[in-house]
Length: 326
Image (cartoon, rainbow, N blue to C red; front, side):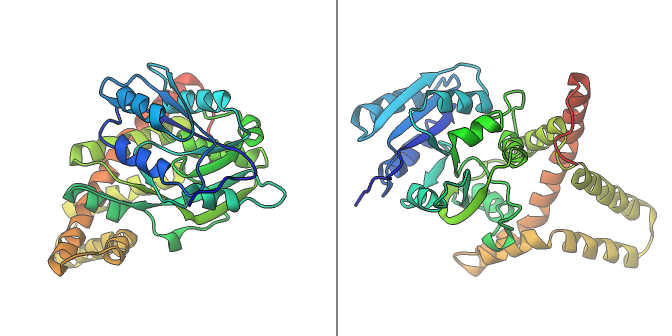
């Protein structure tokens, strides 16, 4: 049974070659217990069947759907344009690669305070259709008990924001190709935005399906960090840890130093092992396989980050961009 919100809500998103994931996503929008009052989609130049699927959905959807083509637009530009085109002042933001829980939009809207807080951040859970997706998603996605609601910077795959807050924050940063939602979150906080965390508003999301795609994704994330000046201390600690570990393996003889290094890496990776263990499913041997893959997932991701971050820093220096956060 569906209901309507007292305040109309516009659902916005960007898409680019989402033919594979779009059908499941569109079904999840159709199944919302609180359906959006309109949907605005900006396509960044898809060359597959994305636009055909959207046109077919628009023809049968119970809500108003507007599809706009912006070839070459990045995610930030697409989201900003979708918000500008939206008719309503309450904006729900997600990604077409997700699958929304039927209560997703209802939980976001109902979590708004009576005085109309600016931002409601939902949560996300892993889903997968292949073994690689399962390993990446299981290991990398944070657990709910890892989230500090007071400091949580929400992904824009599960977000509700007022138009006025979006305007005060200056919109999504169109100069940034990755990590744009984190920079937007920080701008919202600097502009005095009031955040509410609603863990019951769940968007299910899958990781990349190949090791190459996974490494490329985290390279781009770290490059985005470098461009925006995000988390320099965190990246510095990573470089230092791997430098010490590499020197220790090469220079220090004997089993004792290597045991110390192994224990250090186990402590460093503890939260990833914990995620894999808590999310274990199926036969024990499958859980063991996932646990055995944790070190490789961690190392590949870290190497990709260490390669991407300096590229972003060099770009930021050349462009004269200021650091977003210390």
